Image 1 (cartoon, one colour):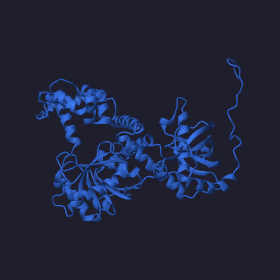
Image 2: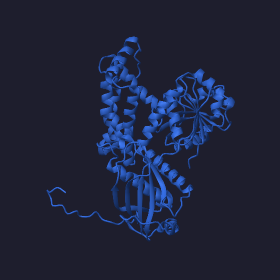
Image 3: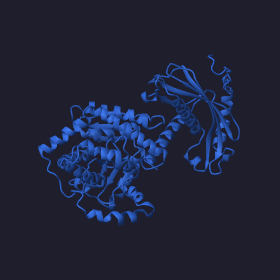
Image 4: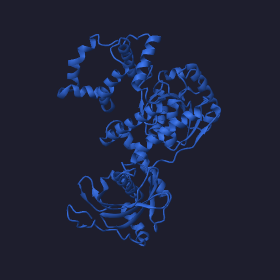
Length: 501
C-alpha cells in the first residue's frame, strides 16, 4: 500500500531538482522550493511546462489536480511541515553537509531526507548529521518527471525501514524504486554509464568516431534493446535456445581481449574538450536545449507506451501509474456525489495539440478515447475497481455509435455527461454527450456493454456492487428524456455508386 504524500520540499531546482518538483507537483503533492539561483523561478517554470506537456501525452487518465508550488528564501521555510525532502544541490560534499545541517535544524524529526547525488555514499552524506539514519540516497534519472527509476541507497540493514518508507512514497508518484544492496561509489546505473562514457571519450580522442557516430551506434543498435530488456536478458537471447550459459561459454574468452580501455581515463585536455564540444554542436546545435528536451520527451513517451502495451519493464510502472490516476479520478467523482436524477459528469479532458488531424480538428480516434475514458469513469462510479476485476469479472464494450456534431479544436476543455439508458443482469446501455467550455455539444456516443467472466470468456450476470448501484441510479436516470437519436442505426442513404449526392 503506497503512502499518501501531502507536502514535499525540494532544495535545489536545476535540471534534476526541477524534475523532482514536477513529479511531485503533478502527482498532487504541495511542493516548497528553495533555490538561491536568480533564475530559479524561470528555470523551474520551463521544466514544469515541459513536464505538463509530457504528462498529458503520457497518461490518458484525467489529470490529478496539481499541488501548490511555493518558493522560499531560506531552507527553514521550505522544509517546515514537509514529510519528504529531496536535496538536489551541486555535487560538492561540503555544500551538501551545509544543506543537511540547515534541513535538520528546521525539519520535522519524522521527515525523510533523500539526496539526488549520483556519486556520494550515504555514509559520506551523513557525516556530522544529528539524525543520520533518515538521510539516504534517492538518485533519479533525467528527466525525472518521465524516467521512473530511482536508486535508493542506505548504509546498512538498519536502514531498511527508512528505505521502505521512501519506496512507498516514491512509488506513488509513478517511480520504480530500486533498493541497492549496499552502498558503493556511484551506485549501479552511473557505474555502468561511466564505463560507456569513458570508452566513448577514448573513441573521440583517438579519432575513431565522432560524437554523432557513437550516439548512432547506441540509438540505432543496442540502446533499442537495452530500453526494454537491459543487458543480461538481451545476452540470454543472444545465447539462443541454449541460453545464458552458452552465451558465456562462447563469448567469455573475449573478455580477456584488449577491446576496451575501461581501466584508463583519457586526460580531459582543452583540446579534447573543444573537439567534443565542436562535434556536439555540429550534431545537434540546430536545436535549442528546450527543443531537444521536448524531442527526448516525445520519444520516451512513445517507448513507454509500447512497453505498457506489452506489459513489460517500465511499461508496467506506467500502467500502475495510470490505474492509480483513474482510481483517484473515480474517487473524486464519487466524492462529488452527482445528482442521480441528472446526467453524470464523471470525466473531463483537454484537447492537446497532438490530438489534431490534418484539418486542425480533434482526430477521430481521440473521440473514442474520451468516450472510452468516460465509460471507465462510469464503471468506476458503480464499483468496478481492481478488486472487482481480480475476481475474474469485467465489463466489455460490444457496440458503439459515435456522432460527430462540431469541429473540436486545440485547447478545448471537454466535459462528458453520461446517462444510463438501461440495464439488465448482463448488459449496460450508456449515452455520452461531449460538451466544450461554451456548452456546445461536440459529439455523442451510445455504448452497449456486456458483463463477462474473463476466465470463461463468456457473458455472466453482474454481482455486487455493480448491480446494486445500477438499481440505485435507475429511478433518477429513467426520468431523464431519452435522446431522440438513441438506438438508431446508420441509415442506408441509398446513393447509387458513382453518382454524387
